[in-house]
Structures are given as structure tokens and as C-alpha cells.
Image (tube, rainbow, N blue to C red; front, side, top):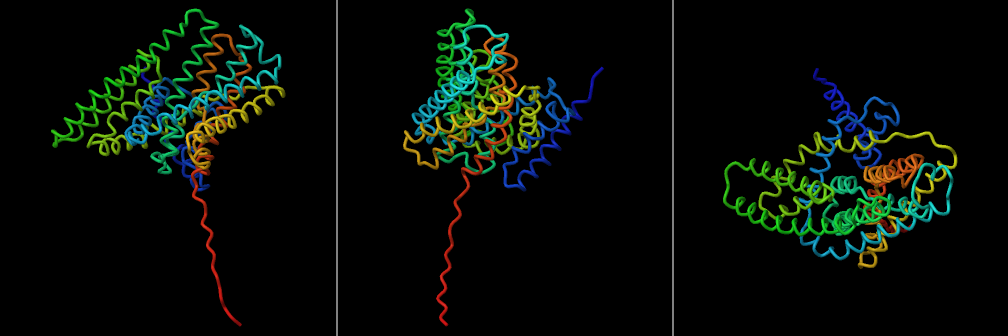
Length: 404
């Protein structure tokens, strides 16, 4: 018999994310923080009113795809080209420094509970903890930047570019470490597929841009069909990137948006999709991150390790990406903004950790500290971004020359 509980779940998610979003805005915080808290409060971590279902999982995946597609549509392609080299350096250091930091904390704070039930050498286990910290969940940053109107700043553009490259570097690092424990994983083959994806994306992107641009200039009647066609293009590129090339679907969605970012109908497409995203898809996606989180029972040693790992996770991203930005001639303020923009780990760290657990590279006890990292970085990243982009208050000096 068909169950209609998904309607109640959806109603609770939309209501709670909006109410908590308005509350967080009252405290001068981005509304996305409220949406994340809604999932955390209503989910298994606290009240356990809602839990992840196939419907929520699939709708949330569609939500992040539309979010990244819109980010691509609203991006300045010329600015992205200018920051291409800088984005690579930022992403590279934003991966290397957290990798070293994660390895160091696992090496120097070695406790038996974190190694029980694992396979492979201690060295590989420690490296994998570092790989977990390299992950970046840019979707939260994108939503926060959009809310503040800072997505197309030089720092915002650099964050977007670096996040896409960060995703690729993360896949390579995960593949390398997986190949050392699982002989069925071939590093060379994976690298070829990644290279193949970008060749494919360039060819398809150029052809699609010409087709959409010519159609946009020719067709002046029903503009609604442009929304359907562009959304189909986004979904197809997302599917192909994930299923054929094993590159994250959000990368395909972002590139699809980027391809269409210079056509005449760009604003019309973006505005209409933003309505759907704001009213339904984005709240479900951000709430679903909170619903994934289950806070496990942890002993004192693991709690201390979780706290240290969280501090390392935040600092290494800010330092790594920040140093990369400074090397590329960004100002100190912009470098800090870029570093903060890469802090959030979100669901990406959970996915990487679950992969490590399946390979036997981390114990189930390690999942607890990873959850803590995800919760803290997910909630503080939008807050730190808001503070980083806040305008400095101008000092108003009132001179009085009253004579007595």
C-alpha cells in the first residue's frame, strides 16, 4: 500500500528550515545555518522525528545538483579563467595541508580504540584520516555566498574554482590509498577517466553553447522551453559525470551551468530555477545533511581526539587555502575569506569515511570523531563566512569646535 508519510516529512522539513532560518537571520547568521540545524534537531541526533528515506535522499541529491547548476549559471566565466591557476594552487595547498594535519594528529594521538578492527598498516590508516580532512563540501559555501550576494566576488570565484579542483584531487587521493588495500582499484584507469571527463566536458560544452546560443537568438516566443532544455542538459551532464567518469555529479552540474552562463536567456533560466530551489530543493538538501548525523557514544579519549581533529580540520583548511591565495596575490582579507570558504566538510567527509570503513582503513570508532568534524564545520563555516565578508565599520569622527 502506498504510504503518504513523505508528505508529512516534507512539510516538517520546509516548515522547520524556514522557521529556524528566520531565527538565525535574527542573530545576523546566514539562513542556511537554520536549515542545517533543522535537520540536526529533527533527525536521529536529537529528537528523532525524521529520518533519511529514499525520497529525501533522492530529492536532496537533486537539490544540490540544482544549487551547483545555478552557481555555474551565475558565475563569471572570464573571471574563472583569470583565477584558474590560482584556484589550482589554492586547491592543492587546501588538500596537502589538511592531509598532513590529519596524518599528524592520528600519528601523535594514537589510541587503541581507533585501530580496532582495521586492516593494513598504521601508516595507511593515518594517511586515510588525513584524506578525510581534505574533503570540501562547497554547496554550503555557495548558498551562503549567494545569500550575501558575494558569489561573483574575486574571492567567491576563487572558492568555486578551487572547490571543483579540490573534488578531483580528493578523488585521486582516495583512489591512490584505496588501490594500496584493494587490488581491483587501478589508479591509472581512474586518472584516465578524470582526464576523459574534462575532454568530454570541453567538447560537449562548446557544442552545447553554440546550439543553445543559436536557439536563444532565433526563438523569441515561449521562453519556458529554455528552462526545460537547460535543466535536461544539467541532469544529463550530472549523470554522465558520475556514472561514466566517476566524477561527482555536482561537478557536471556546475559545468553545465557554466556552459550556459553566457547565453541571452541565462537570467530567465536562473530566476525560474532559483524559485524551485528556494521553495523545495535547497531546504530538503540542507536538512538532509543534519538527518545523516547520528552522534555515537564515545569514551573520553575519543571525545578528546574528536575535539583535536575538529580544530585541525578548521585550521588546516584556512591555513592551506589561505596560503595558496596569498601566493596568488590575493589580499590578506581575501585569502582569509577563501580559506574559510573551504572549511565545510558536510556530507562529503561522511562519504569518504564510510568508504574507508568499508576498506577496513578506519575503525567504526573513528566514525564518531568524523561526525563531530562534519557537524562543527558545517555549522561554523557559514558563520565564519559571514564574519569574513562583513564590511569594516567606518569610524565617524565628529569634530566640535564649540567655544566657551
